[in-house]
Image 1 (spheres, rainbow, N blue to C red):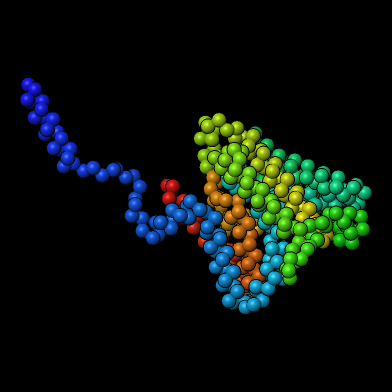
Image 2: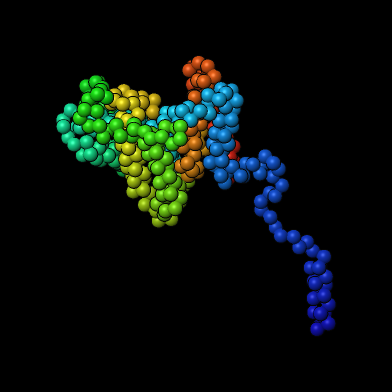
Length: 358
């Protein structure tokens, strides 16, 4: 009996020796160039807008010549995109949660009208008027968040409705009349602070541009280095899974919309300095332009993926295209045409990159 067991053990060992010892692999290691690029872009979504921005700058530099690379033109691009960039930062927070906010520009204009009416026409000290504007922005965001989390309305429908509400309030409070720059200078010059500028070499930079950069840096840190930021991404990726993980998703969503409203109020202050006056009908297309910057910046409309810095690059891409095409003598109509194709291509690239996780 012992001999039989010894013989069977030797037979078993001989079979093991001749068997395949390779480790099972569940990931295709032979992706090819296209597959490798797809995985790299999936892991680094901001890389796409960075590449597009660099290519666009080089291309328009060749087309428009030295005029494009002048410090004046480059800083002008930054100034032109500063307000839309700040709105895009607010929009990015919402889109990362798989929502959308069609009211960001209306909140911004409403808060500028409120601050202007208080400070210029009613004699309220400018700092207090601005604080009331900030509180109003937070309140408008809370209203959006409450309707979405408590009443369970879709974000698109909710913010489409509040966009109309805020726009109507703009016209009612202002009487459809603008507040002139001369009146602001005489009574509340602080409202135009972000229109002031300083020089770096031969370049002139406004404080509004600095505000935009600071907002993006702070949001990048919050979203990437804090637990709250990770919760925001988890909600956008899978809200039900986030709830099972113990995240209070509704409270976090309300906080996201409130923060977006506060950023819109900051944009309101910056817009007064950028335009030099307060108009209830300014930045009428700001909602769509902010979404354009977010989409071109590689933040997925399906939520849960993308870097907040991508929205900054997206806004800069739009600014570079508009400036380059203008210097090249292209009609405004075809500038809009080009931006439309940029949006379509950006969404198509996002869909292609998302197939990696499918």
